[in-house]
Length: 445
Image (cartoon, rainbow, N blue to C red; front, side):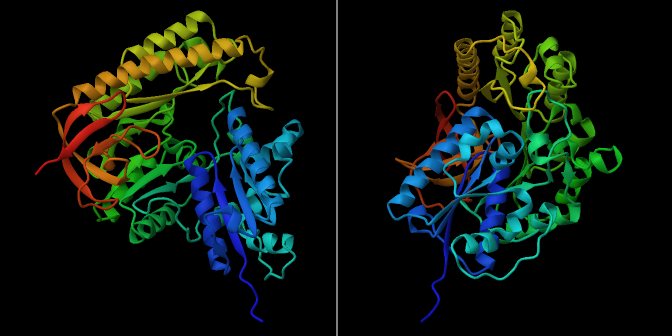
């Protein structure tokens, strides 16, 4: 009798960096002869790649694991395995243990390459022994892409060496380790060969790429190699660009090639000098404004995305209103706001949490409303423009697309009428109307 082929399913939570890990994990299972199921109910083993960055993410992971445990009782997956950042957080901070109680097993980053072997053992099946390898070596393996094949994320480094007081990433992922440029170029070519026409460069701090090698910044060189050594007409987008490492020389590269999206994701977190200092951001308000002016100077019309934290310990009414006024100035095309949650073993967690939850939520709402007004005005100002967009797929009443000024999954979209197109196709469209964050448009005939 033929041996039954084992089946695995994977649920990926959290950021795009987790998505890359999930695709690498699925690639390893495919190489090992496993079948991949989209529905956990059809799998022998279900993996959950968790996020442990903030309280809301931990609660989401716990909820998914609980649902899978209930599914398991009804004949679903035989084992449920937790992976990712929350596994590392729980290992270092036992007070978070309850978030993983529904998992049958936990696997951390250094064992990702051995996951097929580990899962087989948990299922009571024989498996070929896998030699352990470093996480950096794991990153060079083929990926089994999930979601739309036309857009891809390319991780250029892992970990973070910035001293932000509120952030647990250095404790979860370690200090920054940048990938060799040749590996990144090889992966970019592979992604393009498998259908990607948009490549989003990601890391915890993309602008610090290579800094741990010799104290110098090497992202300019990497972007130059992508420009000079890749001839295909693809979009390149820069995400997670911490402002302190942003330079004119770096911005000159995307300004030199229209394949680079006029788009910078610049997480700022606050604007009050006092709060920037409390958060360990290593940048003043004046320096932040200079960085924003630099972007506008080198990349006119560049879309700027940012994120802020509402209710960090020590944030006074004056600090908050300074931030609120800053958002109202309309400098940002896109913005997100997180409510502060204390992260175990961070400096901020040891500070007195002076802002009650109700006030945190109110401050977030006020910031988001201010940005909604700004976004609506930006969108309305573009009515009548003709712009190139990339098709993402079908919507309820037509097609969904984005221009170079919108990143996948996090920004607004273009709503288009139905016409013959597939994801990844690009067309010139004319904007006929706008919403708070989105556009109504039609192809230019």
